[in-house]
Length: 224
Image 1 (cartoon, rainbow, N blue to C red):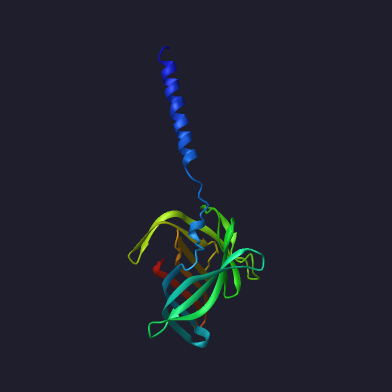
Image 2 (image 1 turned 180 degrees about the vertical axis):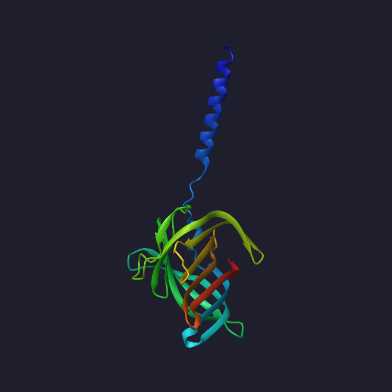
């Protein structure tokens, strides 16, 4: 019995040390995945294609895209927001303004207006198993997203990122309609990869007819 007290004391000390370690771990809401710093920019290679068999249309394009946070403003709801200038590299090597989007990051989610459609891109804090409707703020059909990966390293084009998260759709595909949606975000950088595909395949007596669009956006550089 004389050894019981020291053993109990050691167990108590180990428990207290574990508690202190947990308490020292800072809470991370994940805001760094959606930066709002002015003058922050990211450049991408974009590959896009579309196909419409019933009218005999098939085409594709590739280009360099740059997205830059140009300034802050207050939106119609009184929230801090940022303008996002999107430019396309022309044949002379200059960035030609393409369009302007805007974004908002709140304590609960990250929102962007894309082609005048407000979409919820992320929710905070990011955890696998969470679900949300990216079209909750517009009139589009509900389109559910979820986190497939959170806080994982990832590399591409010679760049390595310590922490990234991967968003995907939960849309149930079938033999006729198929949708692919992947967006990967890196801490302190933002969007680093996007793939959005949508196809409709019809099986007719004359054969298979496909209508679809394919879009891929991959980071090539970022700063500052």
